[in-house]
View 1 (tube, helix red, strand yellow):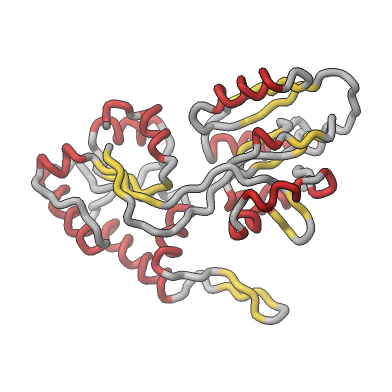
View 2 (cartoon, rainbow, N blue to C red):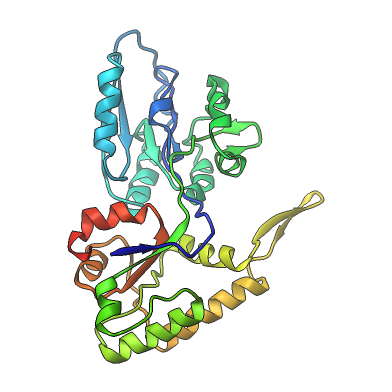
Length: 293
């Protein structure tokens, strides 16, 4: 797949960093995509510490190996239990059973949900604010709640369009640079080959839709005096919803769950001509749909 960046919003994506109460050690070298930690382990230790870290981003095993090599008193066990929702379901269960990993990768938009479980450790008392200036202010606010700090950012990326250059060339379609062109290409592609679609509209990924709305100028949440202002049905959001509903009604996009075997297969075989996501999507494609390059 080729990379084409034309969507200038930043997705609220980050994942897993936290403090380990067992040793009160801030794992700053591991902190890079936001994340949460279990507060279930509270025993102290004077010997080497072993930590369990759940994450799915590519090449994390190499980063963990380097960390372990340079920190002889800490050993991190990296475990990939699945990406996104697959991990979250297991993490909710683990928190409920008081058996959560010490560190976990969590997307920005899911962090407040995990905060409500009471399973995350506030790392502010342990000096987490010392790395605040290493991140943009908008990113740091994603991992804080009042004076509490529940994560350290790890990754974010501008939204972009990954596309199959061979498919656009095969059907003599221009690479779209506007949403109107995108819809026009969607119709022409599916008319030329009913088994191919411009993209997938995953029904269980609200983060993607929020990105579309954000780019259109939506502001879902704000503060008005001492009250919250919620505007999830503002004009830009309704415009975005209408656009995608039109593509759905015409059956010009697929509606399968993303990050599943079937979805990876569609990327690999060309059933999906584009993928609108963060720039980090390149790593996902490389690992799961290498023949699409």
